[in-house]
Image (cartoon, rainbow, N blue to C red; front, side, top):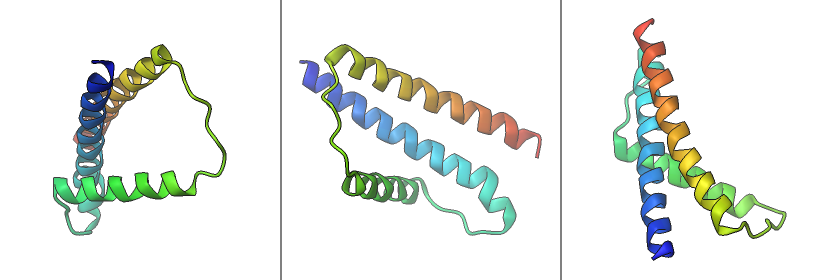
Length: 94
């Protein structure tokens, strides 16, 4: 059951990160004259960066205990929504 919840949270974080990249691009890069990207382009960029980060990792990471991993995933999710809120407020003043 815990592994299923971890997988579900991982997908939610993937979609939230993609949303943050897409909205950030739309609000801050497009006004500079650069072409716009779709949500799925943002997801592809995120997956490329994540894959590169995974393969470029040189040192072994220690196995985290379950409680710290859950807290980390939830903090990541909350942090992404806070980032989107900050970008929204910033874009309103541009």
